[in-house]
Image (cartoon, rainbow, N blue to C red; front, side):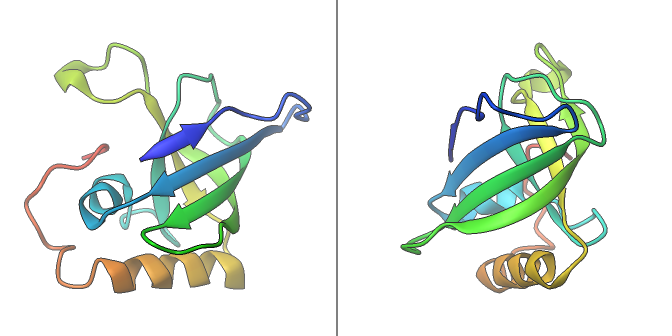
Length: 124
C-alpha cells in the first residue's frame, strides 16, 4: 500500500488530496473498514488530521489502470506510537452517494469470502 503527500493548497476543512494504491487482497483486507456506515479505508499517513476533515482520495485498487476519485471524511485516527505497533494514519468514511457506494461494492467484490476472517487489520 502506498500513499503520496497532500496537496499544499488545502482549504481549512478540506485537508487536500491523498493518493492510495492497494496492490493485493491482503493489503486491501487490512485497510478496509466495513464496520463504518457506507464503508471506509485506513490510509497510512503522518500528516495531522482532525475527525470530520474532508479528504479527497485518488484510489487505485489491485491491477486497475485508473485511479478512482473518492470524497471521504476522517472518522478514525491512529496516532504515532500507538499501542500494538499500529501504523500511524487515518480512517476515512466514503461519501454517502453513488460514487461512495460504487467504491464499497468494488471492494466487497474483491474481498468476497475474506470478510469474516480472523486476520488483524490496521484498525481492529
